[in-house]
Image 1 (tube, helix red, strand yellow):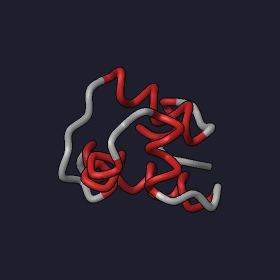
Image 2 (cartoon, helix red, strand yellow):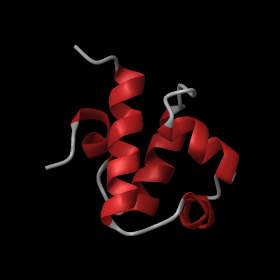
Image 3 (cartoon, rainbow, N blue to C red):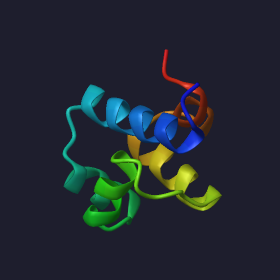
Image 4 (tube, rainbow, N blue to C red):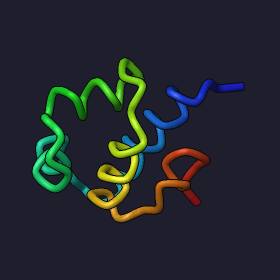
Length: 71
């Protein structure tokens, strides 16, 4: 089974690509530095709850979708 960080990373990257956004676009929408967006998508960063909500809003999905999986 995939670990939570890897699942979140995969789902965040997928959600971003579905919206045809760059990591810089997500950074602008979420207020998270582009380097951090990259680290999150690469599974190098275990994010805080507040970051989950900021990314979810920027990616127009629910926080649960990032944690559990996108439809």
